[in-house]
Length: 190
Image 1 (cartoon, rainbow, N blue to C red):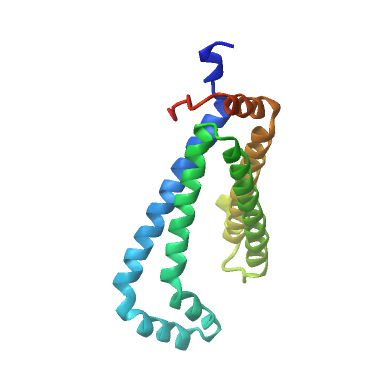
Image 2: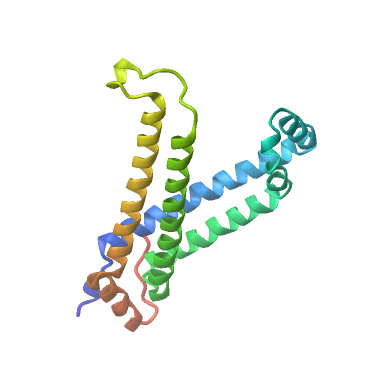
């Protein structure tokens, strides 16, 4: 086996690794921005939450969530850093990273399925506002919202299943097994 063959990383691993690396970076950025905004709104939070509870008493369950929002956003930022690290290690062909990224895919897939069920339930039980729009082939805006949201969730689920299948394929597993036999000569992430 030549050095070029030993260092070859399957394109599927490159795409999956970079996709997770970019998503982790965006998620980290979003968590940090949310944290900054929440810290800026912190002094006004009790007043805002009180006004919401007076106006919509059924939203009282939000108070505990907002009381722990700082910890939640820090946990999300740490999770993004962990996923970014796993994606980086996947690009370096670390054998354990392939399994870890599969676990992340399964966790996100379970979240997407749960969110899809919630989305359908909310849209099916929400009161219909307005009549069907003739420009939308007779569909109401609620039906369009239901279909678009469910379509997005379905596309995400299919993408995650494809990632899992690719990471479990014999070609990808073989690339990671070859990388175990190499000394410290790891491929670059590019």
